[in-house]
Amino acid sequence: MIKVVLPPLGEGIEKATVSYWFSKEKDKVNEKDDLVELATDKATFNLPCPVSGTLGKILLHEGDTAHVGDTLAEIE
Amino acid sequence: MDYEIYDLGLIDFEKAWQFQKDIFLKVKAGIYPSALIFCRHYPVITLGRLARRDNILATGDELKIRGIKVLEIERGGEVTYHGPGQLTVYPIFNFRYLKKDICWFLRQLERVIILSLADFGAKAGQRCGLTGVWVEESKIASIGIAVKSWVSFHGLSINIKEGDLDNFRLIRPCGMDIKMVSLENAAGRTIQIDEVKDALLDKFKQIGGLDDKSSFASLGRRN
Image (cartoon, rainbow over the protein chains, first blue to last red):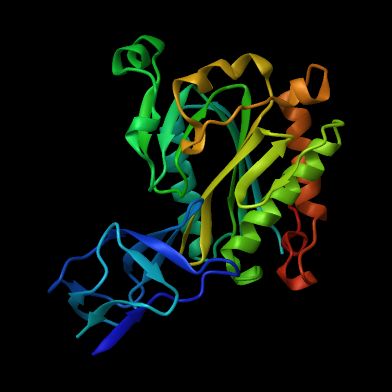
């Protein structure tokens, strides 16, 4: 099981809002495909899928706030 | 390192949006190192990812009469208005050649705008915690970007023509009660859009970052 973690996006950006999941739980996902979009006040950032597999539990949903280092979801 | 330069002229937002996406894919694939797209839009209101619809103050009927569409797009930021009196710039930049820092990128875009506007005698600056470029308390340029696979798209708009500011009253720009100002007002003279484009091209070429490798200047310019 691989954790999808919010990476550092830049100095001064400690958190972002989960704005869009491109896949839902139990979907097959491929490495490098767009997995989740995060939004700050002036930028959005798409996080690619780190590995191929099945999207397991989504821990932070659209509208939730994610801090750098938080686990967003798990890939099985 | 070169970047492609495009000037789409006055163009419907959705057509330019599709053009951006096509160029984005080429930059992502490494076919172009990066690209800079200049254009002006017919009147349109766009909503960024975290925008609230109630920041559009005009009624649906009023927008319909004025022929102004409302589009939900994937950039960051709130609601904004685009019109033909603005110069809109989409930097499709590959962060492979830049510092991988979204905040740094936003601040660099502000610096490019501030230096460009200074060519016209406008004293514009940054405001702490408020992305964009300001002349005193009024906003002269707005920024909202998206970053996908560490390639940027969407970008910045500069208010140039005084006559195009009226439509901002249809919205609460950026979800705030702020006043917008034009470059013509700040400079005290009539300004052609192409003059600003030339200034921006020059500053994108000149501006440096923390080191040469992570500067816009390192992207160079294709003539």
